[in-house]
Length: 114
Image (cartoon, rainbow, N blue to C red; front, side, top):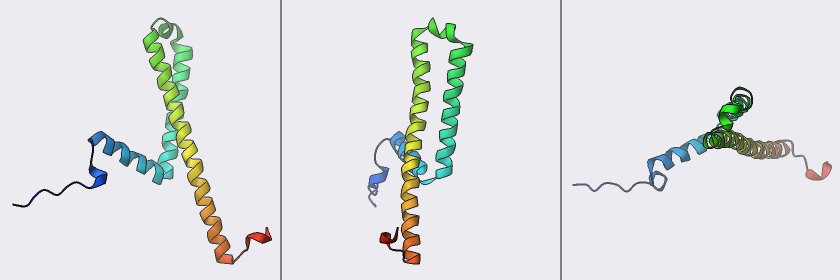
């Protein structure tokens, strides 16, 4: 009988951690997905602000735990969108530098001629 193969290092651990790792890798690689998620997170946070501040302010004030959870969820969505935007900025800057180096090498432009 053949023995079962040991799992690769990337496949070890609980299933939810594998799912989170795959999602994070997808967000780093796919710019359009990352920006869509940022948009929907900020739209959801704006909807929370409008709903919590205009439609149900008294209802939320009388239920402190729901109030706290509601605004923490709103702040969490905003924070995740800000972190994704920060990562997007870094990735775009790196891509810009790579493109500049490629153009300099292609046209043999020296950095001293700036």
